[in-house]
Image (cartoon, rainbow, N blue to C red; front, side, top):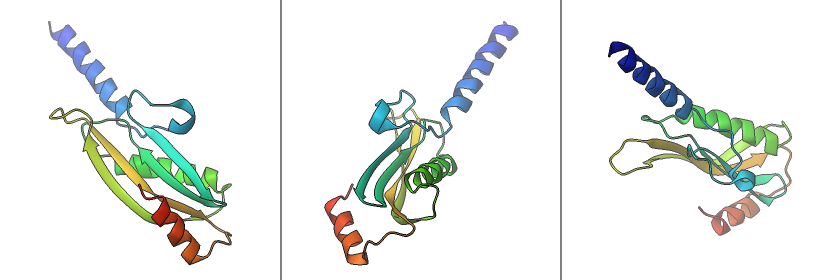
Length: 131
């Protein structure tokens, strides 16, 4: 009896650890992730992108994991150059009402270093592409 309970506990712990990570899953190319996580990006202009990052579902918020995915994807989009985050917002939501499975999400814009975009053009692009 105790061995069965221990195995169940180990399985639950493993599932929680796996599901609490941020997922590096390209939702644009690969579709939905069964664990809820991944990233979506859209090029609005040369060197300027909208970006959304979601963690896998977990019993707690995981913004540190979401930020790791954000930084990794932003660097890829900018060819490993520096970038600026613009109008970035953190949020979280439950995947199943009352069950406590939380997805942490970051939404915003990435401006790659060395861009020639003017501030007014960036503002126009953001106002036309609000989430």
